Image (tube, rainbow, N blue to C red; front, top):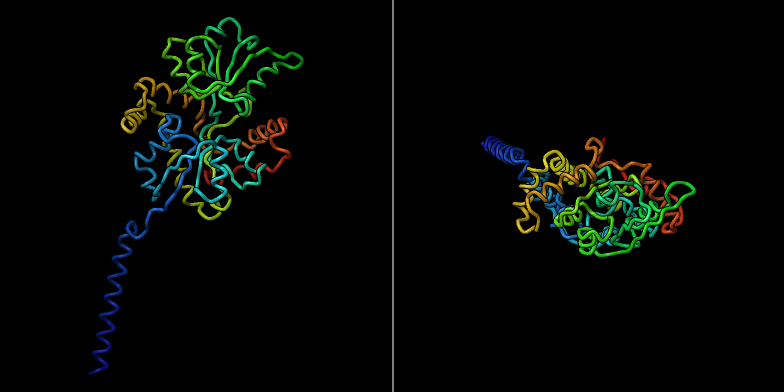
Length: 332
Protein backbone atom coordinates (compact mmCIF):
# COMPACT_ATOMS: atom_id res chain seq x y z
CA UNK A 1 0.00 0.00 0.00
CA UNK A 2 2.73 2.48 1.02
CA UNK A 3 4.66 1.62 -2.15
CA UNK A 4 1.56 2.32 -4.32
CA UNK A 5 0.95 5.69 -2.67
CA UNK A 6 4.58 6.66 -3.13
CA UNK A 7 4.38 5.77 -6.80
CA UNK A 8 1.21 7.88 -7.28
CA UNK A 9 2.86 10.83 -5.48
CA UNK A 10 5.87 10.65 -7.77
CA UNK A 11 3.56 10.50 -10.81
CA UNK A 12 1.67 13.62 -9.65
CA UNK A 13 4.96 15.44 -9.04
CA UNK A 14 6.22 14.55 -12.51
CA UNK A 15 2.96 15.75 -14.08
CA UNK A 16 3.20 19.04 -12.20
CA UNK A 17 6.77 19.57 -13.44
CA UNK A 18 5.74 18.71 -16.99
CA UNK A 19 2.89 21.27 -16.96
CA UNK A 20 5.23 23.91 -15.51
CA UNK A 21 7.84 23.24 -18.19
CA UNK A 22 5.20 23.41 -20.93
CA UNK A 23 3.96 26.75 -19.60
CA UNK A 24 7.48 28.19 -19.59
CA UNK A 25 8.36 26.87 -23.05
CA UNK A 26 5.07 28.16 -24.41
CA UNK A 27 5.97 31.77 -23.47
CA UNK A 28 9.56 32.37 -24.68
CA UNK A 29 9.00 36.11 -25.26
CA UNK A 30 7.97 36.64 -21.64
CA UNK A 31 10.90 34.62 -20.33
CA UNK A 32 13.62 36.76 -21.94
CA UNK A 33 13.84 40.40 -20.84
CA UNK A 34 15.03 43.07 -23.26
CA UNK A 35 18.77 43.74 -23.33
CA UNK A 36 19.61 47.20 -21.98
CA UNK A 37 21.70 49.35 -24.33
CA UNK A 38 23.13 52.81 -23.66
CA UNK A 39 23.87 54.78 -26.85
CA UNK A 40 25.99 57.93 -26.61
CA UNK A 41 24.98 60.60 -29.12
CA UNK A 42 27.45 63.35 -30.15
CA UNK A 43 24.56 65.82 -30.65
CA UNK A 44 20.95 66.18 -29.46
CA UNK A 45 18.76 63.21 -30.43
CA UNK A 46 16.30 65.57 -32.18
CA UNK A 47 18.96 66.76 -34.67
CA UNK A 48 17.45 65.86 -38.03
CA UNK A 49 20.62 64.19 -39.32
CA UNK A 50 20.24 61.72 -36.41
CA UNK A 51 16.68 60.89 -37.49
CA UNK A 52 17.40 57.15 -38.02
CA UNK A 53 17.89 56.63 -34.28
CA UNK A 54 14.82 58.61 -33.31
CA UNK A 55 12.60 56.90 -35.89
CA UNK A 56 13.89 53.43 -35.01
CA UNK A 57 12.92 54.12 -31.41
CA UNK A 58 9.57 55.72 -32.23
CA UNK A 59 8.59 52.90 -34.59
CA UNK A 60 9.44 50.26 -31.98
CA UNK A 61 12.23 48.67 -34.02
CA UNK A 62 14.61 48.48 -31.07
CA UNK A 63 11.86 47.14 -28.84
CA UNK A 64 10.98 44.44 -31.38
CA UNK A 65 14.64 43.50 -31.42
CA UNK A 66 14.41 42.90 -27.65
CA UNK A 67 16.42 46.04 -26.88
CA UNK A 68 15.77 48.62 -24.18
CA UNK A 69 17.73 51.60 -25.55
CA UNK A 70 18.68 54.68 -23.55
CA UNK A 71 20.15 57.65 -25.42
CA UNK A 72 22.61 59.96 -23.66
CA UNK A 73 24.23 63.01 -25.24
CA UNK A 74 28.01 63.38 -24.95
CA UNK A 75 28.99 66.42 -27.06
CA UNK A 76 31.64 65.60 -29.66
CA UNK A 77 32.58 62.31 -31.28
CA UNK A 78 36.00 62.00 -29.63
CA UNK A 79 34.39 62.51 -26.21
CA UNK A 80 31.91 59.76 -27.09
CA UNK A 81 34.82 57.43 -27.84
CA UNK A 82 36.55 58.25 -24.56
CA UNK A 83 33.34 57.50 -22.65
CA UNK A 84 32.93 54.17 -24.46
CA UNK A 85 36.50 53.21 -23.56
CA UNK A 86 35.68 53.95 -19.90
CA UNK A 87 32.65 51.67 -20.10
CA UNK A 88 30.10 54.49 -19.77
CA UNK A 89 28.04 53.28 -22.74
CA UNK A 90 27.63 50.31 -25.03
CA UNK A 91 27.55 52.16 -28.35
CA UNK A 92 28.10 55.68 -29.58
CA UNK A 93 28.29 57.89 -32.64
CA UNK A 94 31.08 59.87 -34.30
CA UNK A 95 32.49 60.48 -37.76
CA UNK A 96 33.98 57.39 -39.37
CA UNK A 97 37.60 58.52 -38.94
CA UNK A 98 37.27 59.10 -35.18
CA UNK A 99 38.49 55.57 -34.25
CA UNK A 100 41.83 56.47 -35.91
CA UNK A 101 42.27 59.35 -33.46
CA UNK A 102 41.03 57.25 -30.55
CA UNK A 103 43.59 54.51 -31.27
CA UNK A 104 46.32 57.14 -31.37
CA UNK A 105 45.26 57.98 -27.80
CA UNK A 106 45.43 54.26 -26.85
CA UNK A 107 41.65 53.94 -26.59
CA UNK A 108 40.47 50.52 -27.89
CA UNK A 109 37.31 51.65 -29.68
CA UNK A 110 36.25 50.57 -33.19
CA UNK A 111 33.64 51.49 -35.75
CA UNK A 112 31.10 48.68 -36.17
CA UNK A 113 28.76 50.26 -38.75
CA UNK A 114 29.11 53.15 -41.18
CA UNK A 115 25.87 55.05 -41.76
CA UNK A 116 26.43 55.96 -45.39
CA UNK A 117 28.77 55.48 -48.34
CA UNK A 118 29.59 59.20 -48.48
CA UNK A 119 30.81 61.81 -46.04
CA UNK A 120 28.56 63.06 -43.26
CA UNK A 121 29.74 66.56 -44.22
CA UNK A 122 28.81 67.96 -47.64
CA UNK A 123 30.20 70.74 -49.81
CA UNK A 124 27.32 73.21 -50.25
CA UNK A 125 27.87 75.95 -52.85
CA UNK A 126 25.95 78.76 -54.56
CA UNK A 127 24.94 77.74 -58.05
CA UNK A 128 25.66 81.20 -59.48
CA UNK A 129 29.23 81.18 -58.11
CA UNK A 130 30.18 78.17 -60.22
CA UNK A 131 27.81 78.59 -63.18
CA UNK A 132 30.44 79.86 -65.62
CA UNK A 133 33.48 78.16 -64.11
CA UNK A 134 33.70 75.09 -61.93
CA UNK A 135 36.98 76.29 -60.45
CA UNK A 136 37.42 77.10 -56.77
CA UNK A 137 39.99 79.76 -57.62
CA UNK A 138 39.28 82.96 -55.66
CA UNK A 139 36.24 81.48 -53.92
CA UNK A 140 35.25 81.89 -50.26
CA UNK A 141 34.46 78.50 -48.73
CA UNK A 142 33.88 78.65 -44.99
CA UNK A 143 33.90 75.88 -42.41
CA UNK A 144 32.62 75.20 -38.88
CA UNK A 145 36.14 74.61 -37.52
CA UNK A 146 39.78 75.02 -38.51
CA UNK A 147 40.62 71.79 -36.65
CA UNK A 148 38.52 69.13 -38.29
CA UNK A 149 37.69 67.37 -41.56
CA UNK A 150 35.88 70.40 -43.00
CA UNK A 151 39.06 72.51 -42.99
CA UNK A 152 41.31 69.66 -44.11
CA UNK A 153 39.04 69.24 -47.13
CA UNK A 154 39.39 72.94 -48.03
CA UNK A 155 43.17 72.56 -47.81
CA UNK A 156 42.92 69.61 -50.20
CA UNK A 157 40.81 71.69 -52.60
CA UNK A 158 43.39 74.49 -52.48
CA UNK A 159 46.13 72.08 -53.59
CA UNK A 160 44.49 72.06 -57.04
CA UNK A 161 46.17 70.07 -59.76
CA UNK A 162 49.86 69.08 -59.57
CA UNK A 163 52.04 72.16 -59.89
CA UNK A 164 49.22 74.69 -59.47
CA UNK A 165 47.54 75.67 -56.22
CA UNK A 166 44.28 77.60 -55.87
CA UNK A 167 43.55 80.72 -53.84
CA UNK A 168 40.62 79.85 -51.58
CA UNK A 169 39.72 82.04 -48.64
CA UNK A 170 38.21 80.37 -45.61
CA UNK A 171 37.27 81.16 -42.05
CA UNK A 172 35.55 79.29 -39.26
CA UNK A 173 32.01 80.27 -38.32
CA UNK A 174 29.38 78.63 -36.11
CA UNK A 175 26.58 76.89 -38.04
CA UNK A 176 24.08 79.75 -37.73
CA UNK A 177 26.59 82.19 -39.22
CA UNK A 178 27.52 79.82 -42.04
CA UNK A 179 23.85 79.52 -42.95
CA UNK A 180 23.33 83.30 -42.82
CA UNK A 181 26.48 84.06 -44.83
CA UNK A 182 25.57 81.64 -47.62
CA UNK A 183 21.91 82.66 -47.66
CA UNK A 184 22.89 86.34 -48.01
CA UNK A 185 25.47 85.50 -50.73
CA UNK A 186 28.43 86.77 -48.71
CA UNK A 187 30.32 83.52 -49.29
CA UNK A 188 30.45 81.08 -52.18
CA UNK A 189 29.93 77.98 -50.11
CA UNK A 190 30.54 76.09 -46.91
CA UNK A 191 31.26 72.61 -45.70
CA UNK A 192 28.57 71.36 -43.33
CA UNK A 193 25.54 69.12 -43.08
CA UNK A 194 22.78 69.15 -45.69
CA UNK A 195 20.19 70.56 -43.28
CA UNK A 196 22.28 73.73 -42.97
CA UNK A 197 22.03 74.13 -46.73
CA UNK A 198 18.25 73.72 -46.66
CA UNK A 199 18.05 76.48 -44.05
CA UNK A 200 20.16 78.77 -46.26
CA UNK A 201 17.79 78.06 -49.19
CA UNK A 202 15.03 79.83 -47.25
CA UNK A 203 16.63 83.09 -48.43
CA UNK A 204 15.99 82.16 -52.07
CA UNK A 205 19.57 81.23 -52.94
CA UNK A 206 20.01 78.29 -55.33
CA UNK A 207 22.50 75.77 -53.96
CA UNK A 208 24.38 72.74 -55.21
CA UNK A 209 25.42 69.82 -53.01
CA UNK A 210 28.54 67.71 -53.59
CA UNK A 211 29.89 64.68 -51.74
CA UNK A 212 32.93 65.78 -49.75
CA UNK A 213 34.56 62.36 -50.10
CA UNK A 214 35.15 63.15 -53.79
CA UNK A 215 37.72 65.69 -52.53
CA UNK A 216 38.98 64.29 -49.22
CA UNK A 217 38.65 60.81 -47.61
CA UNK A 218 35.91 61.88 -45.22
CA UNK A 219 33.33 59.38 -44.00
CA UNK A 220 29.77 59.18 -42.79
CA UNK A 221 28.77 58.94 -39.16
CA UNK A 222 29.77 55.65 -37.58
CA UNK A 223 28.41 53.55 -34.77
CA UNK A 224 31.30 52.72 -32.42
CA UNK A 225 31.86 50.29 -29.57
CA UNK A 226 34.77 49.32 -27.36
CA UNK A 227 36.59 46.07 -28.09
CA UNK A 228 35.35 44.77 -24.74
CA UNK A 229 31.71 45.35 -25.70
CA UNK A 230 32.19 43.92 -29.20
CA UNK A 231 33.55 40.71 -27.69
CA UNK A 232 30.93 40.49 -24.93
CA UNK A 233 27.74 41.52 -26.77
CA UNK A 234 28.00 40.85 -30.52
CA UNK A 235 24.38 39.69 -30.87
CA UNK A 236 23.04 42.73 -29.00
CA UNK A 237 25.11 45.08 -31.17
CA UNK A 238 23.96 43.27 -34.31
CA UNK A 239 20.30 43.74 -33.40
CA UNK A 240 20.82 47.46 -32.75
CA UNK A 241 22.70 47.99 -36.00
CA UNK A 242 20.15 46.01 -38.02
CA UNK A 243 17.24 48.11 -36.69
CA UNK A 244 19.08 51.39 -37.38
CA UNK A 245 20.08 50.43 -40.93
CA UNK A 246 16.50 49.38 -41.67
CA UNK A 247 15.37 52.95 -40.97
CA UNK A 248 18.13 54.46 -43.11
CA UNK A 249 16.99 52.30 -46.04
CA UNK A 250 13.42 53.39 -45.35
CA UNK A 251 14.38 57.09 -45.39
CA UNK A 252 16.36 56.67 -48.61
CA UNK A 253 13.60 54.80 -50.45
CA UNK A 254 10.67 56.89 -49.22
CA UNK A 255 11.70 60.38 -48.01
CA UNK A 256 8.06 61.53 -48.10
CA UNK A 257 6.80 58.76 -45.82
CA UNK A 258 9.78 59.11 -43.49
CA UNK A 259 9.16 62.86 -43.28
CA UNK A 260 5.59 62.28 -42.13
CA UNK A 261 6.77 59.95 -39.37
CA UNK A 262 9.50 62.39 -38.35
CA UNK A 263 6.99 65.25 -38.13
CA UNK A 264 4.79 63.14 -35.86
CA UNK A 265 7.77 62.30 -33.64
CA UNK A 266 9.25 65.84 -33.56
CA UNK A 267 6.38 68.29 -34.19
CA UNK A 268 8.52 71.25 -33.09
CA UNK A 269 11.49 70.50 -35.38
CA UNK A 270 11.35 73.97 -36.96
CA UNK A 271 11.26 72.51 -40.49
CA UNK A 272 8.33 72.51 -42.89
CA UNK A 273 7.19 69.20 -44.36
CA UNK A 274 8.77 70.09 -47.70
CA UNK A 275 12.08 70.91 -46.00
CA UNK A 276 12.14 67.59 -44.15
CA UNK A 277 11.46 65.73 -47.40
CA UNK A 278 14.28 67.68 -49.07
CA UNK A 279 16.73 66.99 -46.23
CA UNK A 280 15.94 63.27 -46.31
CA UNK A 281 16.32 63.25 -50.10
CA UNK A 282 19.71 64.98 -49.85
CA UNK A 283 20.84 62.54 -47.17
CA UNK A 284 19.77 59.64 -49.38
CA UNK A 285 21.77 60.93 -52.36
CA UNK A 286 24.80 62.65 -50.84
CA UNK A 287 25.36 60.71 -47.58
CA UNK A 288 23.68 57.28 -47.59
CA UNK A 289 24.48 56.43 -51.21
CA UNK A 290 24.53 52.80 -52.38
CA UNK A 291 22.24 50.90 -50.01
CA UNK A 292 23.68 47.52 -51.03
CA UNK A 293 26.86 48.31 -49.10
CA UNK A 294 25.23 50.29 -46.30
CA UNK A 295 26.88 49.78 -42.93
CA UNK A 296 30.20 48.43 -44.16
CA UNK A 297 33.54 50.22 -43.89
CA UNK A 298 35.78 50.44 -46.94
CA UNK A 299 39.35 49.59 -45.97
CA UNK A 300 40.90 51.75 -48.70
CA UNK A 301 38.98 54.83 -47.52
CA UNK A 302 39.96 54.21 -43.90
CA UNK A 303 43.63 53.88 -44.88
CA UNK A 304 43.44 57.09 -46.95
CA UNK A 305 41.91 58.93 -43.98
CA UNK A 306 44.70 57.61 -41.77
CA UNK A 307 47.25 58.88 -44.30
CA UNK A 308 45.78 62.40 -44.19
CA UNK A 309 45.91 62.41 -40.39
CA UNK A 310 49.52 61.16 -40.48
CA UNK A 311 50.42 63.98 -42.86
CA UNK A 312 48.96 66.48 -40.40
CA UNK A 313 50.78 64.77 -37.51
CA UNK A 314 47.49 64.05 -35.73
CA UNK A 315 48.55 60.42 -35.53
CA UNK A 316 52.15 59.25 -35.42
CA UNK A 317 52.13 55.77 -36.97
CA UNK A 318 50.17 53.50 -39.24
CA UNK A 319 48.17 50.63 -37.80
CA UNK A 320 46.27 47.72 -39.22
CA UNK A 321 42.90 48.86 -40.56
CA UNK A 322 41.32 46.16 -38.38
CA UNK A 323 42.29 48.27 -35.34
CA UNK A 324 39.85 50.94 -36.52
CA UNK A 325 36.78 49.03 -37.67
CA UNK A 326 35.10 45.67 -38.01
CA UNK A 327 32.46 44.62 -40.53
CA UNK A 328 31.63 41.49 -38.53
CA UNK A 329 28.60 43.11 -36.85
CA UNK A 330 27.03 44.28 -40.12
CA UNK A 331 27.90 41.05 -41.92
CA UNK A 332 27.77 40.59 -45.67
